[in-house]
Amino acid sequence: GALEAKDLDEAVALREAIKAFEDGDASGLLSTAKTTDENKKKTKKQIPRKALNFKGHKYAIQNAPMFPNVAADYAESLGGHLLRIESAEEWDFVRKWLNGKRGLYVDGSDQIEEGSWVYSEGTKVDFRNVKVVFDGQPAQNFCAFFEDHICDLGWQRLPFIIEWDD
Image 1 (cartoon, rainbow, N blue to C red):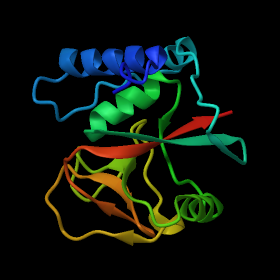
Image 2 (spheres, rainbow, N blue to C red; image 1 turned 120 degrees about the vertical axis):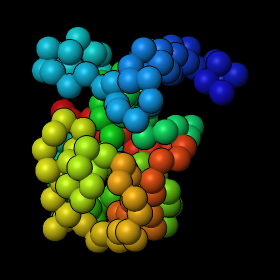
Image 3 (tube, one colour; image 1 turned 30 degrees about the horizontal axis):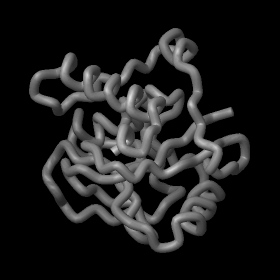
Image 4 (cartoon, one colour; image 1 turned 90 degrees about the vertical axis):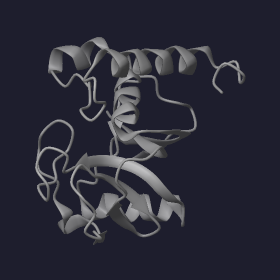
């Protein structure tokens, strides 16, 4: 799709994310995202002009559906990460911005230990800031924004939200 739209930067970044996924864990269940500060410094931020600003962060929706680990790698290849809701104020901003959109991956999973939700860089997800609806799905689920709450949608291809920190 990126090639058809003649968006070479997006096509190259997508190709790199797919290669990282293919070179990683053969089962495809573990993200191949590099999280060290050194690797993050090497990645040039590629923030779209249409990205929204809020309190030192920029946000954009990537409408091309991807599996959550591929989405995380793709976001990182652009110098960002999947959206991390870190305050009630940010939660309110995102809900108003999305205005009913649903089924978008955000950062956080319990794929390492069922019921223990962590962001991709390893810190614990603080669900006090968001409305959460978990419906007892099996382990290895990923957080997704769904209407006005965060839920676990399992392992499927969905659009996602990329966040860049200033």
